[in-house]
Length: 428
Image (cartoon, rainbow, N blue to C red; front, side):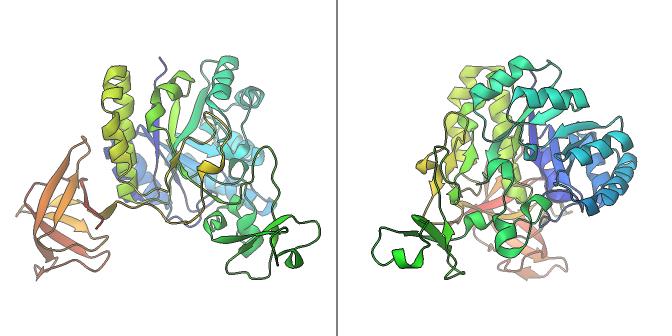
């Protein structure tokens, strides 16, 4: 059996540490340039060094994203950035652009290179091309079925690795190559500045509907209008692949770990470099246990299925789908009435340490109060209920609630919370 890697996103140094502690085999992150999450906090070079040191101390690898589709003006900066990464020493680069790939091969000839899903990797011929060019791993396009991935595995060398998304948001455009954000507000998704217009609210106009023919062009049978852009009509065309203008459910393959392993996938990738530590901890811990349970015994995996499903439902999500893995998505994979997340638990903070009194030090993220029962989420899978007996500022002042985000607080809990434990509470 191929060893299965759990690859977890990190949008900040704190989240990286959470991912490592809660079960990641590898983490991926972006520097301050050339990744596809410009709105994420991202990492300075010094933070990357610290993150790599922490990860390596725990036996976890670190991959750096440089997966923009580069323009001419980007290339000198890419070269300079790769020279800097030579000194920093990540374990791999994630790249989609052939020009960027060529620079990486020249500047970092010994660096492991992974080809991003952004490169539209849909067939075994593409995998063989990248293998011949020197790539060690290719990330499958999200449009592939497990049957197609199995066929790719059968046609590529054993030492070539396949990485596929296991969980997270689905993009409405082919392999993430979206132009909507650029069209509406001039922010290019392929340069890392996506505004996620696929989540905005739209109205659908139909030519045959009374009173709506007059507002549509003659060649339009259907059109959509975004709520903040009255009078702007976008034609809607549909073919056998469907129409991808609306809000997709999130991918979740927690019930299909065996099929993913049997397809020959080496790395299970979690989407979400914009996510909180609570999200990362919840998803990483759940998939870590599912993978380990299955490797120990398929019977144990199936016996614990309700726990996996219950836990994965405690992170923020937009309902779940299996994407393209078993069939082409249909109308059931879209959400039509809302672009908001399901949010069952609120992130309160991550325990940094305990003081001499045994109080848990946190940077507070959301409001909670003395007397409430919260949950201590531990890396080993336990969820410990604890009463908040007291809340104290850095100056030792007692307060009844914690209403101010980012305030440093010391929490007196009825149960012990250890460093890196996550504090959360159930949404009312």
